[in-house]
Length: 402
Ligand SMILES: [Zn+2]
Image (cartoon, rainbow, N blue to C red):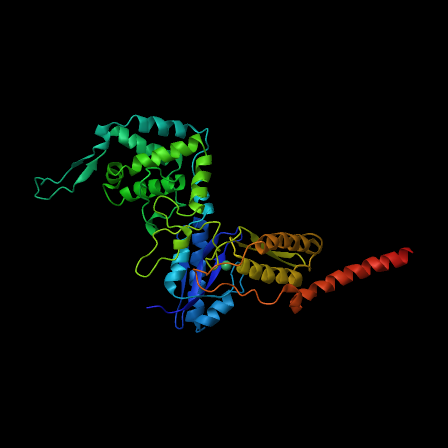
């Protein structure tokens, strides 16, 4: 059943999307972004309870969204054809997500890399043919649970992956599918970290996960991928570029397929620089817009990251620039530094966005409404107050000096 929902996109100060607060006619909820960092996940938990508390206190779903869309980091209320569409948006994996996982690995000159190479080179076919123990009846009559018997060289290889940082809390493996070895046999280095984390952590809960990964070749693919990346970090960029191109490899849906057809679900849609983060249409530019608010000694900064299509980019630009024109002047630092800086950066970003052709049909619901241009918004003219005050100070000084 397709019931339209409204949602707001919540972004951390560093530009990472934390998740989505949604509201239907009767209910509200929160969806974490599956690939988000652990800090974003924590922030998402707070958003989750905030949104639900407001609803429990009697605020209607539309009111909850309207209320929280004014909070720092929250985007405008957007419409989606159904909740599935928002959930799909939450499964998008960005190049920044990949990079965060690779950042968990030890530095290139750390001995853990040498140990990884030696441990995997030392593995024999016998080590890879894992045998199982247990399964027999003990003298008391109980049946001994079966368990895999891992050889010492195999355990050394496993330890090497742990020591390298390839098993990291930055990947929430319980909420994501286990990466598979692509037909090419070459695993994306960030997927290698995901696979290492999922396999080695899940072995603690379920015997035989490592055995499974050895048998399917996943564990070797993990080590190969990490070693290749260590030898040449440009490989990660190569994967990122291939992912951005049409018809991406290794089972990732092409950008055009981010919205799956009826009855099928994309397993792991990935965002590319060519698709708008907000409406899912292409082409899009990788830009960020900023807003600044300064009130005496309290300074506020807000940033919305792309990629954005022409329409969404212009809409975000107009909203944040008007906000800055209105609020970005009321502290000394704001007047002379942050206000003007924010406006100039937004101007540079909107130029890039305006060079794009009109976007195609959006795949993630309605896109932002650009609304009136900045010069036709009353709030923008608040900027004239501090500027005229500044001019009058200068004029007064000139007159006195003359
Ligand atoms: Zn858009």
